[in-house]
Length: 211
Image (cartoon, one colour):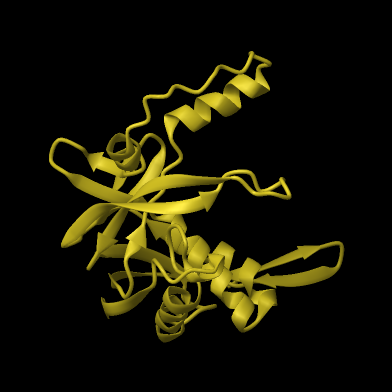
């Protein structure tokens, strides 16, 4: 514990202690992935650059559109992933159900780490027993009084799981509290599209082991 003296004032800076745990989570409900596609990214960039809007092509392929929304770790080997940031955001957001003031503290005292950096994203490897292309009806113009309807196609994972490496400030948050918080986050917030936080019930999970 260090002390500093400046112009007669004394203050104490406590040592920040770090600990790390490996947490395995298991999906309670199916998970919907929805990676932001290259087509959508280019459309936003073109608009920012003032380029004229091009007409949409009529050759939409549902299967192709679906698999473009996968966070691929290794497409040739069929290895899928998820951004580890989803789980940190999920965990921090769950605090609104308990104590809103601690969300900022948790954001600065939890560090989630994935296993692969792909296109600048830190990804955890996603294990699953089945993945298929799910079709859903969505609103495509939320500003219109008569909302237009469209179809979206997303990969849907069943019986999914992954491992999270979590570092935390152990003098501010204890391991049992962290595990309880992850379980609350998995039930009340979830990850992916149409999760509880967004009015659905997909992407819920629970902690099955930690070390």
